[in-house]
Amino acid sequence: MPSKSVCLAALSLLAAACSSSSGSSSGAGDGERAAAVKNYGALVSANYSDAVAQAKLLQTAVKALVAAPSQATHEAAKAAWVAARPAYTQTEAFRFYGGPIDNEADGPEGMING
Image 1: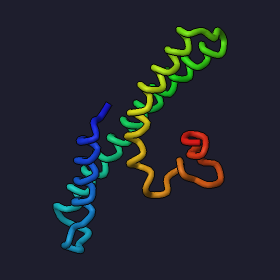
Image 2 (image 1 turned 120 degrees about the vertical axis):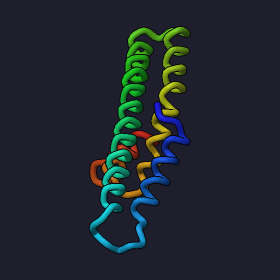
Image 3 (image 1 turned 90 degrees about the horizontal axis):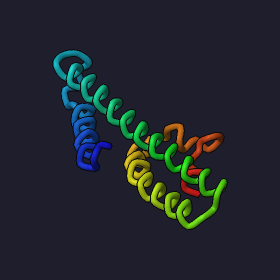
């Protein structure tokens, strides 16, 4: 799972690449910009992949708790929630541009944090 510092570095790189003062749409800046966007996309994909994998483990633990409530399955579900939270939290950095998570009509944000 990418660390917060990796996420911040990627965001900084993207911001620097997108704030070219040349105003030109050609030249070396385009290659750097394209590389930054490609790396940012890979970082976002890796973060969401980690979050989905942890959510699936959490879902399995919750299903086990519902199917057979016990102290052990309760503890396992709590541990799965604690383990899933960091991966999900890292994806929050990608929510500040009106992506699909925040879509008011059918986005899952309300169900995730509600």
